Length: 424
Image (cartoon, rainbow, N blue to C red):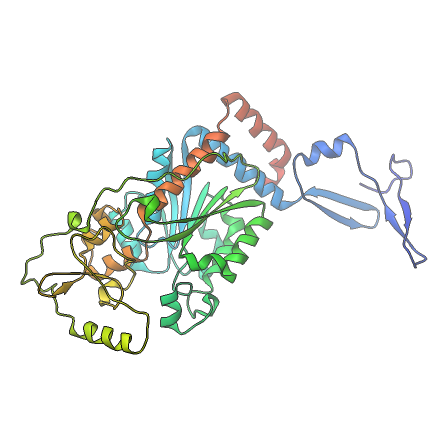
């Protein structure tokens, strides 16, 4: 709007209580303005002498762009994905499986992780990571934003080492944000959100992360960027896995996308009734077996000192086992160990570890024992991730499908409103 003595609008003055000056007011309420802004909830207003410029806010343009891209991808049947903190790619592969269950395919455009050894495993063994997948080897906070490209779905599993009870004890911290290496990961995530601009974000972490300052800030940021956030806590009751691995999940969905509130996260049947069904035949004289004298003596000391650490010795008849963590190969006090009649003990093999999480052992094929346990131990319960992905496909993707003519009309309107922005 420009100052024009013959224009149809008039600047009027509104009295300000207790002051002599008046506040200038221009009432803008007409059909042309409403057609320009469309469904946008926010606009930018720039004022200078003789001119007022009103634009649809950049966040609204990003929202419209990601939703149009998502709807188009759903109608084509193939969506794009990127994973932050990918590790060996368990969550990435689970996402592929879940969307396949819902009738969609996934193309992983990029994955990012700071540990080269886990990326090497993913490149070598993970079918979700292909020759067309860009590999970003860097800490999140150090990634140049140009390395990312926009995707329909982005998932991330920020490090749990500052959030879990054991991680806090090991690092002698009381807040996750005090972790010397991992705290800045949240900054790396949030600065990348505008660049990635996914329509759906998926997050997984330990239950303690849900009420942390880090995740409160992350969720508030998503809400400010026009996403709705949905939360769930999943465990083996949903996944059917042998490992009891409770995890906190949230899904951030762009506000303009329809959401079927009647849909539920699917549960899966138990493929194994007992641990014995996945146990490999390890010979009695194999070096894996040990008397673990140190751990036995430590357990006695811990009990005498009133510490809550208890050993978890299991046999083939066990119907479930506790969490197997990233440092499992170090033979710690609390993760599960298999014990036999003569009190000799051993760790689960990488294959057994994978199957306890319902992960295909091929994901850690031709990989050292230590790296296998690290990759699996910091990964997910596969059926939790698969269930979340299937839920997204059924609750969101199925609702945004439109007849082809209607989709094209929506895309034409999108180009009309935001073509200049996209061209820039």
